[in-house]
Amino acid sequence: MRIGIDGTALVGNRAGVGRYVYELCRALDRQLPNANFYVYSHVPIKLPVESQRWHARFESNTWMTKLKGILWLKTRAGAFCKADELDAFWASGTFLPKLNPNVVSVTTVYDLNVRLVPSTMKLAPLVLYKMFFERDVRRADKLVAISNGTANRLKELFGLDADGIVLPSVTSSFKPPDPEFMVATLERLGVHRPYLLAVGTLEPRKNLSMLIDVFAKLQSAGECPEYKLILVGGKGWKNKLLKRLMRQNENAGVLPLGYVSDEDLPSLYAGSGGFIFPSVYEGFGMPVAEARACGARVIATDIPEIREAGGIGPHYIAPTADALLAAMRELLAQTSASECPAQVAPSWNDGAKILGNLLTGGVK
Image (cartoon, rainbow, N blue to C red):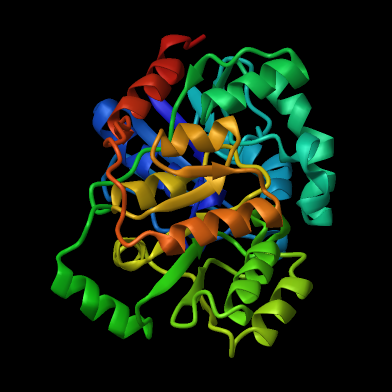
């Protein structure tokens, strides 16, 4: 069987969607040992699996490599797919290229930003989503949602039923690290305890400006004088105000680290005095699940999708300054982490079984 995969999410540092696609590709390789996989991207990427069954398909026209990933997929990837005579295609980035009629298409939906929080999106992606998102999810043969919350919103907003729920998993490396290893990692990163931690791309939906304002208020009141606020995440967009706040509050202990590798994140989670996730909306909330797995105390926004990620352990709040201030005061007053039941999460193999069945079960 010949399966195509949109590989544009694998470009650059893996975070969020990129990590989800990478891990599911590796699990699909185990799930479908007789399949051949063809991964398409406008620029070169490293394949998730080194195997003769995995094939990279990159754009050779230099001018075409300058296109946005979605535009390249819509205008150029179809020719590659046709040449490879695919049986099925996983639209890992939601959008579909032009496919032959006999190709089974499976589309993954991560969130409904375009309908729920369009003001937090960059203009170009917003325009492309408005042009193609609904059309592509309606024409896909099978729909996958990354959470029950996302599936419910698909039903409410578009009247569409998900054919499968493939939850993000937490890889085995996300666990409380050896104390000596943790100390060495934090020292290498220039991080000193105690600190509070936030993880997320620097963009409006993550609500980090509010977090900085609340932290600065606690600092000015002398309620957490020894604490730093560590911000982990890529550059993002629509963040001029956020960057200004970060600069203005450097002396108050706000420390942006930028992108941090998966190898270093467990030490940051485990070493924190608390993990704060005040997003206004998420399709799931992978950092919350990772923080839980590493033993961190968690404050997170109270929406169904994030509750799926965090289970019953975190302190869930409305994404407002007053609610966050009260929750952070409560967290800082605790002398130790409260006992939380372990969060049972599905494995990537569980998700690959669902996805693999959809890709292979309906071959036309």
